[in-house]
Every structure is written in C-alpha cells, then in structure tokens.
Image (cartoon, rainbow, N blue to C red; front, side, top):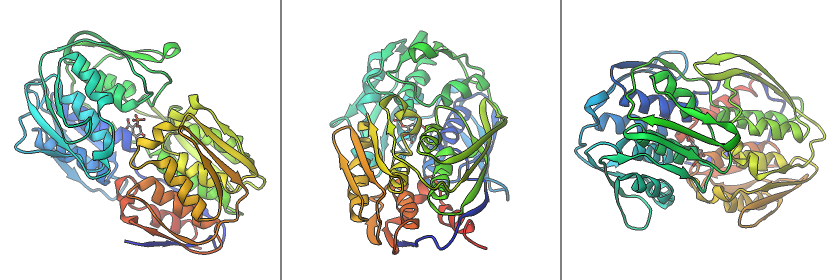
Length: 435
Ligand code: S3P
C-alpha cells in the first residue's frame, strides 16, 4: 500500500497517548508464559510484532485469552506453563518481523527438553542470530542453522551457568542469556560494552526472580535455577512511538504536543536528550511509575533555530531505534548532525544507515555515511518524492515526518509495515492537525 504523506499545513497541537511499549509488551507476555499461574496484562501493544510473540507462546502451551477493551491496547490473560515447561510445538514457530520474539525465545527454550524451529519473514531471515546462538551454545544448548540466520532449530537441554562479555550492547542478547540462565545451576552474568535497555532487569523481579546489576561495569546476573510466579503487569506508552510525534512537533512551526503516560526509562529516552541538545523545547514531568518503569508526560513544542549535534557511540543504545527520526529532524537543523558508533543500524529490520542516506538524499538532503557513522547536513530544503519503507516500520514513519517539512507530498511504498509497532500512527498524526 502507498501512503501519501503531505507537507504540514499548520501547527500540530493536542494530547496523545501512544500505544503500549513494544519491548515491555514482549517481555510481559513471555514472562507470563514462563510463569506458574495466571497473569493479567493490561495495555499490551496490539501490533504485528507482539502478535508474533502471543502466537509463539500459545504454540508452546501457554493459555492466552485476549480482550480488546476500549482503552489502550490489549488486556491479556496468560496462564503459563510454569514448572511443566513449554510443550513441544506441532510445527515451525513463525516470528514474523520480530527480532525480539525470536532472540528472546531462544533463551526461553534453551533449558527445556524441546526441539523447536524458529523462522521469520524475509527481513528477519537476514538478521544475525549468532550473537545469541553462540553464548547459548556455550551454556549447552544445541542449534542448527545454515549460516547464523533463520531458520534456526534449537535443541534445549541441561545448561551450565555462563559469564559472558557480549561484544554488542544489545538488550535482546542480554535478555536471551539471562532467561537461559534461569534454567542453569549457578550465576549467569552478562557484561555489555555499554548499557542497553533494562526492561528485563526491571520486570523479572515482579515475577519473583532476583536480578543483580552493577551499573558501573554494565553487568547483570541471575542466580539459577529460578522459577517465575504469575504477576499482573500494566504496559506504559512506547517512547519509541512517541518519538515520531515529538520529532514532528519540533520541526513544524507553532506546534505544541503533549504525550501522556510515556515510559521514561533513561535507557530509552536518549532521543529526548539529543533533541534538547539540538535546541528543542521539551518538558518532561516524571509522574510516577508503572510497575518498575518510570512514566510521565512529555511536552514538546516547535523550536526555531535548531542546530546540529554529535550523537556519541555510548548514547546510541539509548536511542538505537530513533536514529531514522533524529536524522529527519537533523534536516531542519543548522549545521552538521553526526551519529557515531551506529553500525548496529545496519542489522536492524533493514540496513537503516544506507536506507536513511538514500531516502534523505532522494528528498534533497546532503547525507554522508561510513561503516559506523552518519552525517546529515542542514538545513536542507526537502522536496516531494516517492520512497519505500523497505519493509521497515521505523523508516515508514520517519519518511512521513520528513514529508511535514517538504515542499510536496512524499509517497511511501509498503506503508502497511507500520503495523509492526504503531498501527494507528497515521491516525494519531492526523489528529494533531485536525482543527
Ligand atoms: C529491543 C532491543 C533493541 C531494539 C529493538 C527492541 C528489545 O535491539 O532495537 O527494537 O526489546 O530488547 P538490540 O537489543 O538488538 O539492540
């Protein structure tokens, strides 16, 4: 489907509560499926990626009941497999487009006597899986994969604890190892080169599992074996979805947008710190917490005189999904915005570094990129063009925000991929312009 995104015709104003956080939704469903007893999950993101996780845990023997209340997202009741363990599924588990589903499932399954084949769509089949299969192999799990990509068959078994220095700052890798560690005897530790999002460390204790953390050394650990007990979880709004509306507000003159109930976990809000450095006017009010996740309101308004900044490698994990949006905002800023240490973007849903450079260049911007860096020169006069999402939800939404500052419509091919994380993005963006 082609979506025609139009230049802004006036300021964006209003209040929005974006859908539930994708990372927390995946974890809530997976942990509830692993737990003994029945968990009630509220505000779970209703999107293709989370549906992949729901279908996977159902195939593995968890009982899942989904209701769609009128409020936010899904209310889900999950009765987990608990001490019985996951069932041997009847067929291949399709993880769709979802790297989180696939990589976290490897850790979930590793300690159990099941043989499970995980597969995914064309994009997921190109993404690296060795970063998870290698440490889990060291723990004693068996994997069959042609070249480190899906489809991957995992043969679970008796695991030994592991102390692992991960070469990448990746919450998916960290979580897979910690979840496998729950089924191993002894302390399993993951040490990262930089802190990645810490939702697993915050949510596992709610399910009765202790997680140790040493922030100074970017390390965390579990002491297995451990069993999870059912728990009720409420999912706050996704900062990565909020980022697109925040970025839109920053570049459209006269805009004032209020984003409610946003997860304000500092391992996720790097994009706000970068927007502030670029001269954006934001006000973040921490209102409380949803479970162990800090939540609050983000007020963001148009900022004339934005200027370029340097995004350093250490802060990339805290904004790894927001680089496409920040690159679009950089087109409206004076001077060069440089992103350093962003090679991870090459192995996301698509090669996002090349895609950002090609897309913004087609719109008229000057963009340079190297193996692990990206530079956008602003201010750029953007014009209308036809772009593809390349099957990547975050690129689709970034192009729609770019259109707001262009002098003509931007046609976005494969728009339907926004279903992966923010199905109602176009409706929410339009609601901010409706007067
Ligand atoms: C995620 C972690 C990040 C992020 C992805 C979701 C998670 O990936 O890009 O969208 O839920 O753990 P990495 O951990 O591989 O960086």
